Image 1 (cartoon, rainbow, N blue to C red):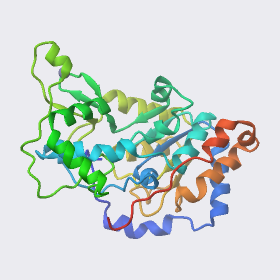
Image 2: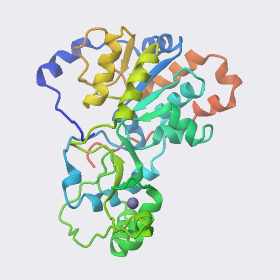
Image 3: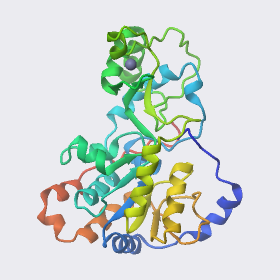
Image 4: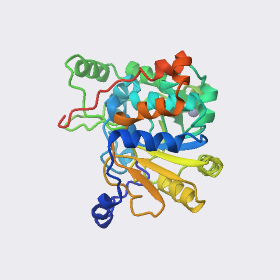
Length: 331
Ligand SMILES: [Zn+2]
């Protein structure tokens, strides 16, 4: 995310390929299953996990919140993220969470798709205990006095305050010309005037006779630090686990990279499933399978859970659920 999107040094990129295992999908399934089987596996996910839901991997652009048209772009970009559906990887992981193999999941994603995959079996409090959103959530907005507003409600208020932009967005939707959206719900928008975009006041502040329209998504922005309680909790999750599984992340953000390093320092077994080079590739002790999670995760879950899949209709349904709608390469 925008806090730290360091570019991966070229030397690491060129050394990376040699670190990866070259194995068949069935061998990968077997290896992942045996890694997960003992249970108590903490899991870290990144942008790669959400690509099949139509949310493209992040293109590092820093400090966009400082850009005055960010609020408008965020307004236009929220709808696709709000409407995105969990994919097969989210559901495979959900089956592992639900069956207790993965008691703690830490995600760098702000799209809320891990939560959506569990929405029919876990309530909000239960999900909050078991899923840590390292970089915050796009589905909540807060004012500078700490009042939190549900994002969908806020989106409706923005629409009401900006009918002309609502019309513009509806037209984009109707013609299928949605602007390109980044995983943090920001869109790339050029050549539009944004001066007219109005952000309504925080209703709680207004009720307290205070004017405050500094509302922003509950995300960690470039230059901001992760809250101490979130950081502490992420470290505790790593310390209490028996192994660490990394899925769809290049660990380009330091907040996630240091968790992996912490796990390795504690001599925890670590398995990474990701396509392409990552910041972690040169680290000794890291085992990496270079493969798409879409190809192997469901079969790996079947192998781990065995007869529980057929005995439990919830797990069985999870392993049949999930969209596969990766964004097209060039749009
Ligand atoms: Zn407020």
